[in-house]
Length: 308
Ligand code: HEM
Image 1 (tube, rainbow, N blue to C red):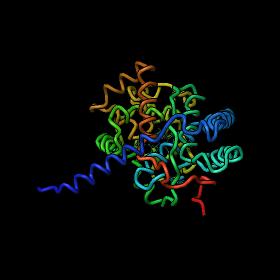
Image 2 (image 1 turned 90 degrees about the horizontal axis):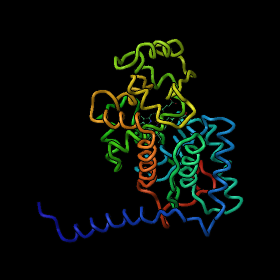
Image 3 (image 1 turned 45 degrees about the vertical axis):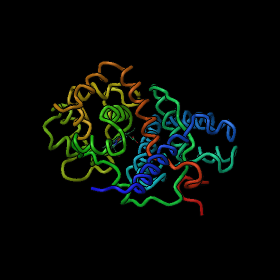
Image 4 (image 1 turned 120 degrees about the vertical axis):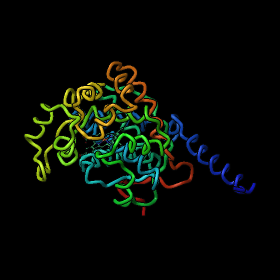
């Protein structure tokens, strides 16, 4: 196939622009424009997590969804049924505090990235330097686009590997990021198929979950911890659970099911330090997925809607 010189040049330009956008993120982005931004976010997150530990999980999940969906529709603040409405209130509250000290300066996308890191730290997990300077989408995300960008809990290992791979995250990043399921909870509808239909699950574990999550339908408000061992502690117990076939979601147990990621799960189960370091690395990579920067998008004044 012949490729013209001009199309090569435009391709190079696109690649150069894409890497320039990521390169614009910087840890010192608000040092001059809003020096108190990070401390304000941290104290608000600490207060929210002290009131309810699960809030740390909900805030971490919000940033994950923002990163994955943004990859197709740019920075959006999502309205998903699966995300607890209360965590939106926490973000709205943090945004209001940040707006009060620096008007229309700090993006919602950056607030989510910092709040995710601070949540992990407040529950005993690793810290990392958050790169800043993301901007927010000028358009709302449609529920369909959001759902299509996220992998369902029924995903197989190869679907997980290729879904993350499409966003520049390798299988080690994927396994490390899944370790976020060391905190937080899932609805019965998310794990029903795994406890009733899969065979790669510890039988006593499945039986105890079946007591509150009925087969077929119902149990809409029933929740179970993603990590039964230490549900509100950000540690590596999630991986030891997988070794014992106690992953709550089908997609969790796929990471340790005789496939290519078994060795990574074993490594993270035996070494908290290996998990912490891989998680921090992967969170920075996830936060760098095609951000809006420079003059793209906008700085929203309210996180739940684009500026009018
Ligand atoms: C692609 C693989 C993933 C799948 C299939 C997945 C799926 C799920 C599902 C089904 C739930 C429970 C939702 C519900 O029933 O309400 C959940 C919760 C959660 N997920 Fe994931 N997830 C994935 C990756 C991630 C990543 C990469 C992170 C963060 C880095 C993350 C963080 C969380 C957290 C913290 C919760 C608990 C939220 C809460 O308690 O409010 N997940 N996930």
